[in-house]
Image 1: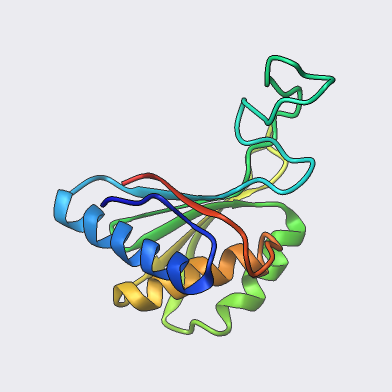
Image 2: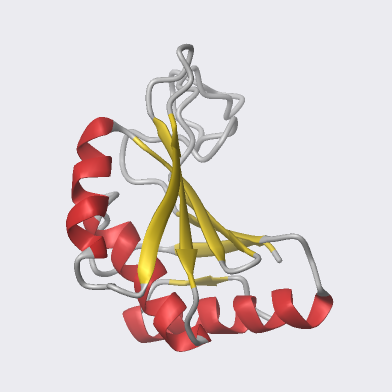
Length: 148
């Protein structure tokens, strides 16, 4: 792979297809894609510097949403509201099914594992739609392939 981010919907899906292809060719355990932060959300531990945080460090521990894929399984974390939206989205993907939901007591959400046996284009379409529907990203959000 030579590029790792995209904002155009068509280019995002192509990026996801490329990441899935690279993941499969390399035999890696999984790939991870992440939505770029929206205003008021940090990008992991480091956020854009502003006058209150001159060193770029953020007190907000909330990372942007991510989705992992490996061994024909998606893995993602959802709040209760996001989980409701995920359930609705999965109605459009009858070949995908939730295999496991885990809600540890010390976590504020649910980890979801979804079996997804399909071609790379269908998988990419799901990932792109999941960021828009489940995580409420706009149509021009930035997607990062952060691990392949």
